[in-house]
Amino acid sequence: MAGDAAYLLYSVGIIGTGLLAIPTLAGSAAYAFAETFDWAYGLDRKFRQATSFYAVFALAILAGASMDFMNIDPIKALFWTAVINGVLAPFLLVGVLLVASDRKLMQDQPSSRISRVCVAIATMLMFAAAIGLFVF
Image 1 (cartoon, rainbow, N blue to C red):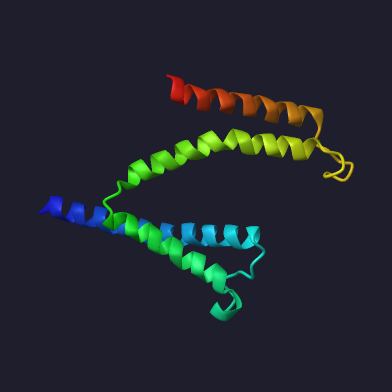
Image 2 (image 1 turned 120 degrees about the vertical axis):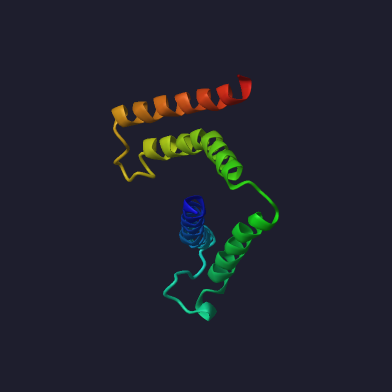
């Protein structure tokens, strides 16, 4: 009896977490696409004002929900998402470093030498970690 109650509470917690996470992640994706492609966006806008934004939002929710029906293990999906983010992060840091160092782009206020060195060290460490992930 006590085990059934614990299982029920556990299930309610997992469902509640999913109900919180899916709209948040779908909204993040919709905002990212809308800003990238210069679409009208925002949950404060009506559907007709931001059709593309809401379409991405709905597709992201459907994709998240469909993972359950395709028997995709959510823990493995989170793990591989983190691996992909870790492999891509050093490339993004190189872009940040290039932009932060450019006097013209930074309107004659480039990042300090110490901050650029710190970012460069972090970038090299992340590249080494990404390479080590696949070598070892």
